[in-house]
Length: 333
Ligand SMILES: [Zn+2]
Ligand SMILES: [Zn+2]
Image 1: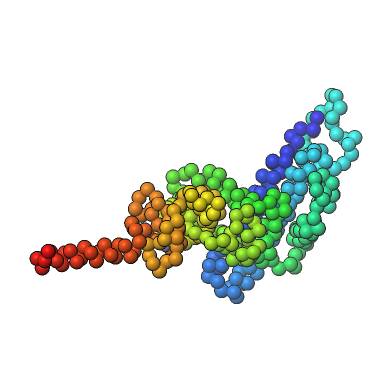
Image 2: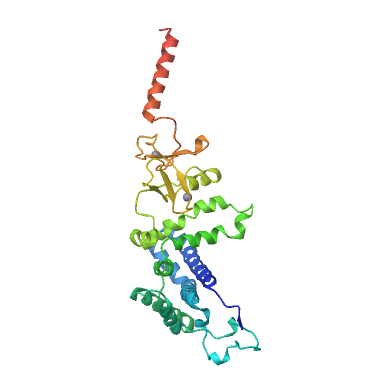
């Protein structure tokens, strides 16, 4: 028997994990200088960080191979084995051998096995992507790579890999899963709520690096529509940091006109909202969130706490009160 045969899910999880690690490497390297925004400093830091960026390429390549293996496993993991079948210990009385002790298919043969087992023919784009990453990875691992890498190129590759092999929404779901399932998340010393709300900085960062159009292709929701503050993320921020939650990743679901809701791209939580103009007349916002306490009632456009009625109504009520007080003081009816 050949024991410990791998399965589709194991390879898929490995692939996602490699891509999340590759993304983290790029994001952590680039984030600080991205916030500072100086072009010459950025280029210096990227040059200095080529080793890290090269590691990201190795991880992306490993992810691509794992996705192909995951797909081949749906037919049979035995197709991943190289060597003579004569050596397979599958007849009676032969000693078991672990799958990991066999030679497995090298990269070029893996592409062909993958292409032969997928349901629909591979597009030229995906083949070009797989081959480009394989060539780049070989330069890095077997020689001295002269290819200058930058974060945009790598983020493009990471997102393309998710899109080609898994489809829309999968990149963000993989990042979020890795974050939410981290054992540290349950520890009382870890500010889970703040970090979940702050997780959206990755969305801001990636959209700025790769551009709005390419970014939008990653999601089923239209990220180019008007965006609002997510009530869930903002409330987490409000209780732990301050009233100025800086990210806007909630999208209004226009299909529900009687019970409007917003869906947050960051936390993926749906929140009920009301269509009501902002209290502040200089804000054109028309979506409010009504939380359980007064500081949790706010406009999803400017983020400001809302009061009952409109500003004009409140001003009129104040004026009336002042007039009554004046009359009382003067002894007038
Ligand atoms: Zn949210
Ligand atoms: Zn407002």
